[in-house]
Image (cartoon, rainbow over the protein chains, first blue to last red):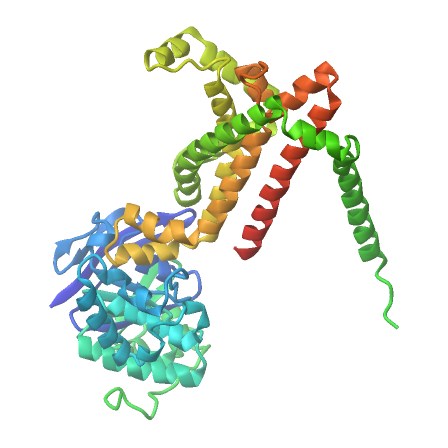
Length: 256
Length: 260
């Protein structure tokens, strides 16, 4: 069943423009979006949560038109690369932030402890956020986004600032939590391991346009655009191979 | 042996000279009257009246300035709209032109028949009254305060607000729960500067409120009137009180800015 459907989306910010973006994500999909810096990936995520005004096109969530809906009513969560944890709140209050309007104190505590346990941060709940490591901050940011059970979770390069070992651990943990909560995810990443191990759909953006949206296998074997073939390392029409996309890692998606 | 960095030495020398020049100039206030005369003047009815009036009017002006500067500063930091550059220029304009001109503009506006009559209908008589002091102080301090608040919000990434809204908070709730707490140090600094500018406002106050003895007699007016009478000791004491207030304000401002 289609959860998110975007049709011919066009949004402008200064000189930059998202042009004619169309794709759809089904419930339970894990979609990874790649593209060069400045391609408009983060801007697209922010447009989906509703903080940029659309010039043209429509956004549907559960077949309901949310194009003009305010962000607070959309039920879409977002996690940024730089965590963006509220510095004036401790870990517990950061995670509980989105629950305050809906649940009484006791219920909030239960929910925060459950998600903190799942993400292995239950021992740091009382700590101020500036005392946390990068991996801990990222887990708190993910906990804050998923504790409210968003219908769709958007993640903007959540692992890019982590060392390879922590990234691997985080990927495994995230995979488990996402499965446990049966969430639909749109995740920006350039890491081939994320695409192999987490995603069932992959998208590629370039200069405000979505060039291809498909399975990873199709992107590798039948790139629809020269830029896609450059990124995924397949020979372009001119026969040059610019980047090598690594093969599926030994740890398969199922093992995760 | 480390080589001498001549350029660095010259720059430090110039900085030292400028600091010394300012310190000596400001410090000259301390050397004119005797300690006994300062103590005596501090207890004089005129100085006590002007100190009390200055503190009251500057506090009221600071409150109004903050109520106006917070929404304006946030708007200028966060939103793009047609004519934004023009609005920014108008908001910054009073910083660039003399306070006397600002006072003249205020007198022409509030003294005009229509505005004066409209204000009188709601029970406000502004020109040459104590309320005029507050009005003049508001217009003097407002542009500086808006600028500081705008810069403060510029330093708070809008991403925090996007996250808050995605978690179900309205824009107003997000402003109250995220933007304001994250900008609180800058807002405190802005309030301190607003208070210091209000206490020190002279030209606009003199023109709009007049310089009437024991009526619209705020600290800068006391200083001005006493210089005119030749009562240097009382003028200097008023100057010292304003210096103490300014020193405290700048100290708090520097401290909060360092913590930002």
